[in-house]
Image (cartoon, rainbow, N blue to C red; front, side, top):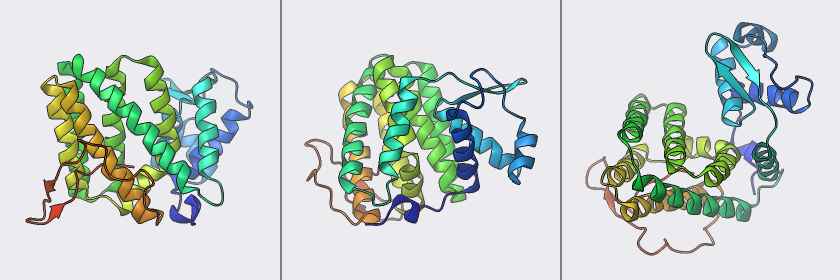
Length: 271
């Protein structure tokens, strides 16, 4: 079975992020310390500032640093969720990738995301709906520009907004761990597997259910979205038929593809 490193050729931003992460985790930079400026880091690594900015965003998503406008980027204190995330990432990046591990993580994520969207639907605010609408707009812009990176960022932002709106600190922490662990898989999915237009339609269905204040409809839409994405990634990218069998009852929805009369077997999701 191919390893993740064989499937994904890491961009410069991830290489820089990995090096900075090792520096932060080693303890050589104390918690609360300010990192060198983007310009200084760019010169140190021999890359442009956009690469450094994206690397810092990656570290921020992992809870390692925080950027304060006008002040700089600061190292955060250690937390158990971050350590757990690191352990899961290590497990996923073994030389020989175990499809069973991927299956289990996808299944765990589905349980968490369905629970979170049901909670968010009960108290969906105009602020949440506005944030999700902006995420969908960015997603659509990425589709138009054929930019998988922009699509993946918009997708991640969408799911993080739902997690934050759920009000569950415990479930939100677990989802943060999963997002950090599955980041490479998600990017790989959008580069190779996804029909992003169909995924956008699926996200819009989730948003519609949230707007209607229907936890059941929101859960069903999210389940269909994730079920399809999980199976598509496992089948196409790992050459492995999912061991979980058919879709969970009630999760499948057929949609018409944007290319015309072609039928898509399920609403698209993401890995």
